[in-house]
Image (cartoon, rainbow, N blue to C red; front, side, top):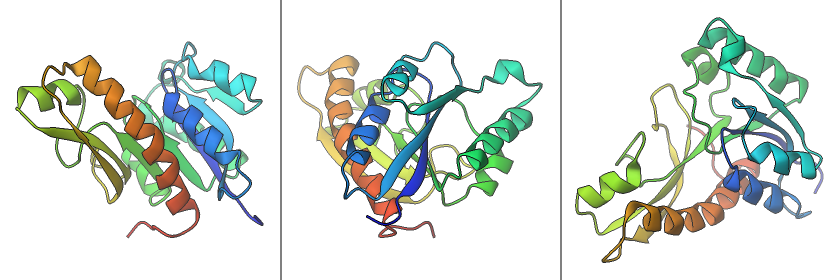
Length: 196
């Protein structure tokens, strides 16, 4: 493949979706390459995986900057150094500033553990159970200034079974996320799905 899109992945924790994106990118026919990992937490377990895979990685912590704008400016500078085409948020638990979202509009995608527009924000599995839903799932979408909003790239529906609790449901949905996210990045990197 002649030109692969250059991708940065943002993480805050274990980075299991990051791992799936990296594995997918190791296929010669995959239209994206993972060139950098950014975490807001130095203790994020996913950084160990990045190191093992010899992927450049950096911690840009809000604690080191006076405000969100300065933090996001530092992130943007790093992305420019890496010549990034697409940003994948993979369990990144910071909300990005409006300026950052504007600057990178159409180039940021996120995976969220619900069937958006339902259950934006946190604790999605428990909220779906509390509401008596019979199905739940995950969504990959383009990131806009509004939280968990923006055009949807793809979704997977996962059934809620009798006896499910939030932990069981989370594990089932994580398996779906691990298939959906590499597919969604492939669609965006190949130009099959674009921000509108």
